[in-house]
Amino acid sequence: MHGSAFQPLTVETLPERLVRVTAVAEHVGGTGSSWRVREVGDGNLNLVFIVEGDRGAVVVKQALPYVRLVGDSWPLPLKRSFFEYHALTRQEKRAPGQVPAIYHFDEQQALIVMEYLSPHIILRRALIQGRQLPRIAEDLGLFMARTLFRGSDLHMETRDRKADLALFAENVELCDITENLVFTDPYFSAPMNRHTPELGPVVAELRADRDLKVEAQKLKHLFAAKAETLVHGDLHTGSVMVTESDTRIIDPEFAFYGPMAFDVGMLLSNYWMAFFSQRGHEAEGSREDMRAYLVRVIEETWAIFREEFARLWRTERRGMLYHRSLYEDQGDALGAEQALNHVIHDIWTDMLGFAGIEIHRRILGLAHNADFESIEDTKLRASCEAAALRFGRHIAVNRKHISSLAELDRLAKSLDQGL
Ligand code: SR1
Ligand code: MG
Image (tube, rainbow, N blue to C red; front, side, top):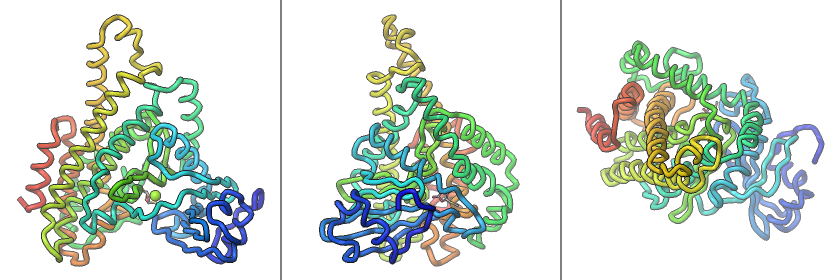
């Protein structure tokens, strides 16, 4: 099938079309006719198949020329598969073992054949079920520090970084989705928006909030202009697969050169949304433990991120930024520490802004989170969402004046209790 025009796969056509791809046949084993194929894609954009045979299994992810969630009225370039492939290969180098192994990439067919992660499940589903995964804070804190630091001018040869900046700069349409769906649409009645009906008054309040709208646009400006590192670009809890002992990060098709704080803010905001949704999942018992767990995960993720970032700063800072000739080489290690504190402080401040805006778009925009959507009682759902919206507004607008997560833990708890 190499070199032929793009054709979407189906459960029926996949064996015949992939059986001659050595990497697939080797991992799956047997003949194509004995393969068991399921389509399991539940994301917003792509087809995802699990292919099982005598020897093993693989995942086949194929882009479609449109947004799956909306249909062919919203075309989307197949090239997102190319960006995903190149992001995965870089992430594997920068944070070894934390992304699925890639077995085969076909640019024309926009498909990636990769490791089948089993018995992993999507982190978002695990959190909705009330499962407390012991590894996520450490694994994701390390993943973010390593990929964000090592993809930047703090670490890379600037020629290589600029080449990657140019490569990923073409991921225009996926950035456009984020620019509109995350930073703009939630703040006016954009045609594809939707929200839980009982939220009407809160939504009107937020859309009339001048300070919030200014902040959202400042954050959009940062997102578009701060080409700092190769970000994952869509690092929510639906982009993470987990078991008790393993954490893998998937789906970096939104990757581009953007601000480090974007990935960190998106991930933490999804934990905060999981926190605010717990009240809607208490039919089978209190989720108090789960809320305490999520607060710990947020604190530990940030602490691990900071520590690992600082370690890399001290040991792998060999790019053109904050060059050692200005600090350590002059015996001024303290100067390097001072600069590090400034960099971390900027990430902290911007992370809070991105987190607040991400919460808003998941409740007011097109693409919602199952954490809230799976709460059937719309009155209860709206009360969880309203608390999250208020929290998001607070952290986005006041981000320069928030100094600790402890302060935010208290705020989250009191908003959740309707205080
Ligand atoms: C139209 S795509 C909607 C959302 O799905 C992806 O996972 C991204 O988060 C995007 O914003
Ligand atoms: Mg995705």
